[in-house]
Image (cartoon, rainbow over all chains, first blue to last red; front, side):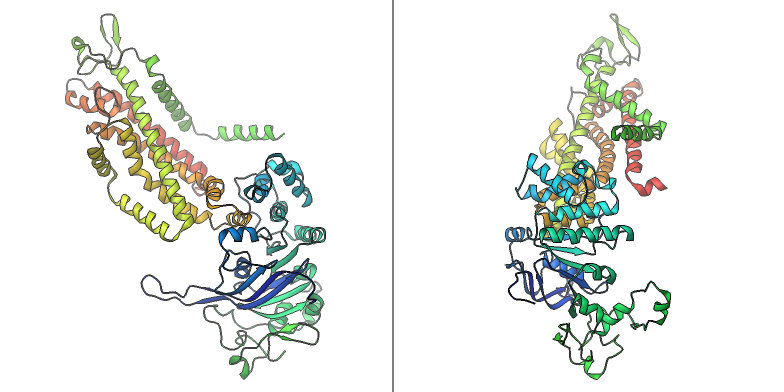
Length: 326
Length: 289
């Protein structure tokens, strides 16, 4: 919240829509409003979790930040530099400061490249290092993520899932970015390996001061790693809060539903827990309900919810919530 | 340690190679070696005419020289001509496959990567090319350009590329959606680097299969065009042109057609068997069948 700290990411009123333009034969498809006017700041060395069910626009939002997706409106600034509308040369410069980690480590490494070539690629194509210096730097990066320098000559299939994700992290860190977008980095991994990768991310943050945007639907992971939580529903943020506030006192009915879906280890607690179960499915983002997008599934919904869209408003404990009733 | 294991893997793989594949590989190797070393192996000059020894049957001897596979209508040794003809047939097939692979694969990758109007133009061109029978297209092009070895290569290469383009295009579409391609893009790699370093190695398997299928077809096309008088011109020997002249004497000298015909059969058959096996090895779906 303090203004003095520098923001590595500043998003203002970003909207991403798909389709809608008339097709070749004059048929005009419906506009899918994947992201619909969101603001988000991430400070240096901060970890922000982006939570929501699949189809709510999380991945579209992360693609927009790295410039793989062009928004219809709004501004995305990474360390003060505008991503939206940047030409490919400028975009390449900006991407030194923002990198991405993907969900499935098996698919995010080229099966035909050695991991040394994969990790060294960002340094090589940008002319930062070559030859012996490149090899040394790759070895350094490998040790940093808990692998050994001599692993550089191996191929991805010779590694386990957790090791592969370490390689992916090493590649993302090669350019020493300010912001790392982690798109469900541990959901494809074994539970036993998950904690190792999360701890590695935390340790790297301490050492390098990198910020994370942590996209996830797993609240237990979010609680473990994040400073701040953002909840997304149908392309909009419905709740933004510091981690402790968020878990102690979730306010938006959607957030509360997400929380009550987390199973408790103790069956007695689980049975006595008051479940907050949602009705129905996520509406199509091509046909977002009027007013509050959540009113079709919300147990608290009243007349006003179907007509007036609630804005994010601050609450006494610092949380921002978009709801008429919570 | 890793050397031992990889040697072990190779040995295990070899044990699973079926006998038919080993046999056709040996046949192929023998044909290629004979073609390459034709000047050393051939007992006669392939173009030397001996008019007193015209249309003689295999095993015929004249002035102390034995014509093991007989002679043709101008008294030329059929064995020597077939050996030299193999050079032409193999050369045309290899070069035209190389030309069409390079043209076809690059166009396919470009279409699949850049999409948009590039894709529309390239893929519609492919549709147009594929809708015209290849042999007709080849005949037309030869009629315009005239016959000759390099022209034959060019004609075959430039009429056969759409097949590779289709495969390369479809595979590129599939591969370029994978996260590791996105990651390379984020790393700062340009289109050319991504296509050559990441897309091409990952689509090489299916393309290799098309290459083997096309290789057999190219040998047949070369023979067909030479047979029609549109390929290699006399006196140079190619299997097609030998058969073309032999056709006129088939009731008096069957061996003129039979010898290069049998060579052609062996070569095409071997390449196809090898290609089928290769496809099964590379395609996990057909391996499980």
